[in-house]
Length: 307
Image (cartoon, rainbow, N blue to C red; front, side, top):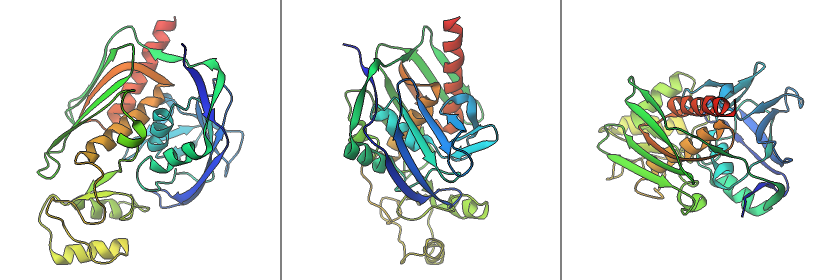
């Protein structure tokens, strides 16, 4: 039996700060007709400008994935794209009244709850899967990252992370259709190292970051003064380093939550290939740059197959 395309039963709106810009945006995910795919619309600029969620529109991968078309950008799209993919949404129009998608809790959980609350509607057209006829390998000598994409009759994603961190260690994560995306992947939050936060603030990044939307890894010993300074930055009561090496702002959902979040990012960035991928994906030390480069290679391969 063929899988039919799906959309939301009705619209759902969110409001919140962008992680990097700190700008408050209102975002609405709307139902869309068959074969629309996922498209963004900057309502503060023009309702007639659509930015399709496709790899050729990636303009930046600095700490998040940005899409730009005709000079109009949408920043930090990966968590939303991942959630819509994991929940089986083929078609949606996303209205946004500012430049960056709200970070919310740093995971896909708010989107999962929204889709579950409004429901999913099957549409009268079969899903068009992306299927490859050859293996694709993308590597980066600079970062030691690699992604191997192998033709398969079902999707699967495997991620391995290694930050040379004593706290994180080497972590792995896996998803395929037998695994609940909503319960095992989508709820996993973004993460940052304690020693990076000061640099990110000084360079006008994570302006919308707070202790509710990021796991903080404290790799090196820190002083009371440093913790007090961090508490002031986030305007919260005194923070502490836990015995497991994480800041006490959040409790982990899983021991490998950071790898699972990288898996979330990978699924979101791979949606930029243009749909649902039928392939086995193995990623080592992946990030937005290599993820989106791999999505571009898939797009090229599809065009060549169709000729």
